[in-house]
Length: 229
Image 1 (spheres, one colour):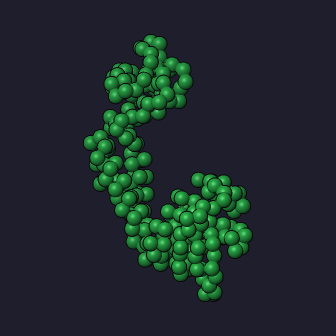
Image 2 (cartoon, rainbow, N blue to C red; image 1 turned 90 degrees about the horizontal axis):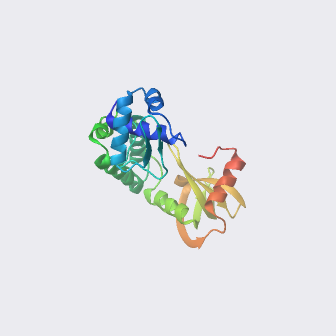
Image 3 (spheres, helix red, strand yellow; image 1 turned 135 degrees about the vertical axis):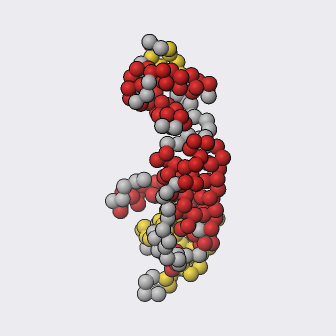
């Protein structure tokens, strides 16, 4: 097991105990020697971890410590790599660039024994069909969601009938072939789903919608029966 992974596991084990836990218990839980536990505790203390206790009495980690630099397990690194690769291939240009930047930044701060996992990950994103959605529209919707602002759209349904809508965008769903905006529609006085490839024109308004997005999203989850993520 890589040293960085072992230190992360020790921190996570200590966080599970509010009272002092014996080094032997930690050693048994983590599958390492008691001597390794004592050595790793001293290493963590040197990195700023507020670990109180001593051999024979037990150890407790006081709140507020984050491992520097960023520490991830091998599974967490693969999850980050896979997710970032998907975004870099499937999202709009700005978000794709951000995903690549995330991987680059993580790579600069990871310990050497974990850094290789970014480039050497065997998890790949397969080729997909081109997405019929303008990058500018996706980026504009994302900005409207963050700022909780209304958006005016000219929207065509599947029969091609166009209507002018004022919507309150609360979420953006990324499917393999389409992008869908979840929004409150003032015209229909209810929640509706809008495919971005059917939006002919889009105008982001300065006017904020009257309810907080988090509450709207929670309400939508309840109506749709979709578990909150």
